[in-house]
Length: 73
Image 1 (tube, helix red, strand yellow):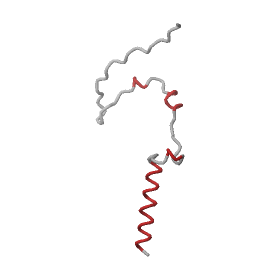
Image 2 (cartoon, helix red, strand yellow; image 1 turned 135 degrees about the vertical axis):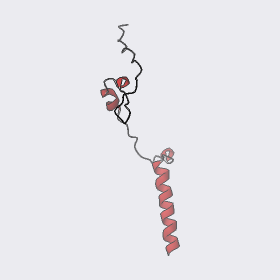
Image 3 (cartoon, helix red, strand yellow; image 1 turned 45 degrees about the horizontal axis):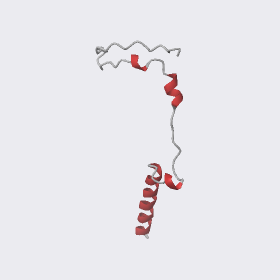
Image 4 (cartoon, helix red, strand yellow; image 1 turned 60 degrees about the vertical axis):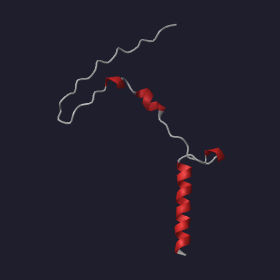
């Protein structure tokens, strides 16, 4: 009885892993892809972000390039 339960749990775990990794997508079974493109579009200037050290000391940041102006072609 216990062997059957352990075998069932191992098979269920393997099936969930295959589903979660997308191995079953060729058969139409799998998780829906998650993405958030609106977050990327709302970012103002991510290149201006500077990382600071834990002690409050600023690390020298490289000069950020000027934003590209849209061309009217």
